[in-house]
Figure 1 (cartoon, one colour):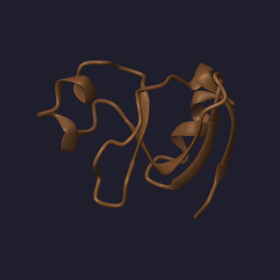
Figure 2 (cartoon, rainbow, N blue to C red; figure 1 turned 120 degrees about the vertical axis):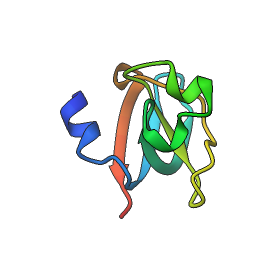
Figure 3 (cartoon, helix red, strand yellow; figure 1 turned 30 degrees about the vertical axis):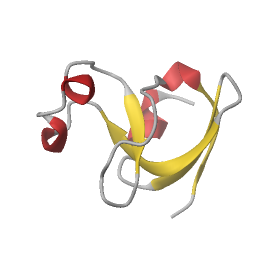
Length: 75
């Protein structure tokens, strides 16, 4: 997976399997998005990603492209 592939799916519902075997599902976001400027962990770390629920609440830890072993777009 490349950063270009991942960023093409920003805002879409995704299934991801990370390097440690954790399987997560949610809407893909990148840190430094305007809507998360008031949350330091989601604003100050460039080139990290996270998954949110439908309301936009962060529900996973931050991860990099290199942490993803497998992914699938759900919608």
